Length: 475
Image (cartoon, rainbow, N blue to C red; front, side, top):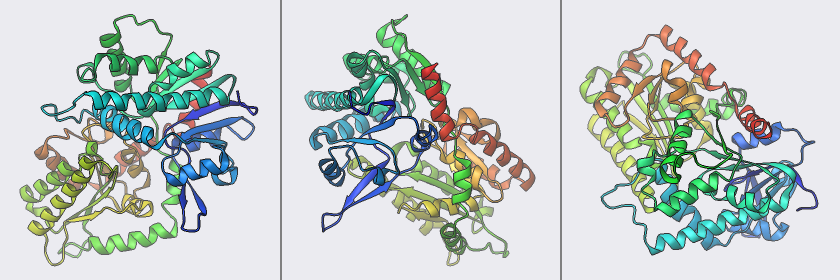
């Protein structure tokens, strides 16, 4: 146990801070945001808390070497952070080989099953690395935790850690939170039987397993019954916490000068309709993640222009597709396909005064907020998503109130369906019709829907989301 033992601990692959290294050997820290950062800051400075995370690159590893893993509070905003220097090959096999190429694919149902997955000797080697990675977290948490401490373990990277930690420290109160969907049993059982049982048994090492929606919680329970048998002997309680948007932060950040500058640039790019009035905007903001369904979204927009020629030159699709996981070939190919389809739409339908798709692939948060503010329609059409915060953020920020076109396969659909225009994310014609419906909606109905969406979207802001989990674990 650490000399300065913590009473609240968070564990996640990515921590609240990352480092870069310049040619002189100087380290620069960059702090991140998100629900966990907000949550930990909400528990107050008088609570002993520590965040255990992994070094993700050479600069992070150098920071660990210089500090012994207990990062400088000046770099972390005062937060106690313990960063683990897990062997780079072990981390790569666990993170890319298993977490992102197997567990992510299973829960988002992304496999092209005639050809994949292949669970061979290489998979078993990578699985052993995943076990090693999870054990490193369990051992660090066991060292850092005070007697009876509350530990909140995050996501699919760390499904085995709850059980491993339970064996090391039976006194702890352990929670696990899944930020992804959970696969239904018939798809989850693509995994080898022993691996499927190990993943479920790992999470069942926690006192409480929590999910973003009831649908994912029910799928987890169904998998437990299918794989481990009915009446599984576990004291694990199941919870649901639908992470919401941070309204105060978003509204304040969206009115900073840099966002205003980007709005001016976007307005110029969007231009005016032939009658001189403003063009409508369909906005999407995503990582180029396979589950986000960007290609079908572009094809649906193309179908709108083909089947509803009255929208030509009167609408612009502002599409931000920020690169993700470019070290995996399938993601690089997907990003290239997004760019190819957008270029094709522009060459087929564009005119000298109108570019139908404004595609941006360089990550820029201020520009995303500018697009949120300008949005007439927010287009969120994932084939599967744990929540999808963009669906919650755009209605909060949009200046005039926007219409949300939302996939029924997004976790956010459970909360927002009533005031969104729902779509089947595989149906190109159906999505094109939904875009037409959204673009045609009168300002009164649009504003009313957006108001209700914003209220629903902010019902459980990040700090509350975190504190609720903590309270449920301690209760």
